[in-house]
Structures are given as C-alpha cells and as structure tokens.
Length: 266
Image (cartoon, rainbow, N blue to C red; front, top):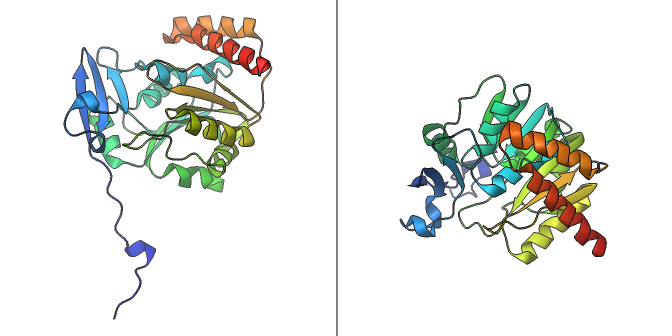
C-alpha cells in the first residue's frame, strides 16, 4: 500500500564536500559545489595563515570582532557558521573565561577544520555543534543566554546569507543578553544588503556597519541596546586591541565615524 512519507522518512539533504587550497602560506577552505576543480574560481569560505594559525587572516573576519570595542569580558560567544574556524579559534584562545560555541550544518566543514585548520576538540569551554542555525536561535532555551553572536552563513552559491528574514534576526536578538551584540557578514548585492539591514533594524536597538572591504564584504554590528559612543574612548580601546590582539581596530573606529557622518547626512 502506498502512503505519503512522513518527514522522518525523507532522506537527509546531502551536504557539499569540502576541499582546501594553499597559496603563499595561506590555506583556504572551499565548498566543492562552488567550482569545478579550479580554485581560481572557488569562493573562499575561510582562510588561515599557516605560520600563525590562531590569528585571523581575512580582513572582513577581523572586522567581525569589532564588538571588542564595546565588550571586554563576554561570558558566552557563539558563531553561526564555522567557516575555517578563524573566529572560533581566536575567541577560544583570547577569551579564556568565556564559553565559545559554533553552530555548523555541514559535518564535512567541521571535520576539515579539525584536520586542516587547527580547530581544537570540544571541551568544557568549547562546543562545536552540528546543527541548523535557525533551529538553534529559535530554541527558547537559548534566549538571553549569549553575549556575542557572530553570523556568517553562506552556502556554495554565496549570493547572500542563507538566513536573512526579519524572523531570523529577531530570533538572534532574543538569544542575546541585555547588552548583547551581533556581528554579521553581508556579502551580497546592494538590494540584498538593504533587505538584511532593514530586517536587523526591526529587531535591534541600533545597527551600524563598516565600509565595504576589497572583497565586497560589509560587516554589520547590531546592538540589543544602543550604547553611548565616545570616540575618544573607542580609539583608546582600539589601540589596546591592536597591541594585544594584533587586530586593526583603529580602522574600525574610523569606519564607525564614517558611518555616523553618512547617517547624520541622510
């Protein structure tokens, strides 16, 4: 007798395999669906300079850490989308008092990060979880439990974030603590970028972003509760971040000033 298959009878969707390339001391991760064997045309999902595997190589990924200008001691940092594990490794190393979680849907990405990108195994502080990011942020048990949320969710097509609805960004805001922050990588068309920014502005008290970097990424910082911004203080913090963490934080402050100027003119 024929019957309609139940949802748990349906096969799990296949996840893209992953591969790596190396060029001038930098190892990069690719999803195999995004090219046909020629890494010249492959979208880079993340990179690591092999001489300094704990540092963040790509400029836009460094910018995902700009929340450090406003928060020095987060208790729980979460990444949605593992990439090449740059954010996860950095946060695990430099915030030893914090819990660090990473949510990644593709098990091949997790395996490759362990094998080729120096991702540590899970322990009492570090949890890399194979799961759907939407399911995670919609879970009421996560609400008000995360101080920093870093969102970089792209598939092999890399045409825009795979989760970008007002409902998704509201769920992200719900997961944040009272003074929590979210950074988001927007690699997309101008129209798609505007749609994402509008959705974030519905869910967050304040949303700012840095100028587009050379690889067409725009990084957004969204505040659960808008902070008071004193640029003299931010430049002082940026100088400390540059020395202690080798991140170009003064440029982030410059970018925030540029955003504020443009916003005032608008």
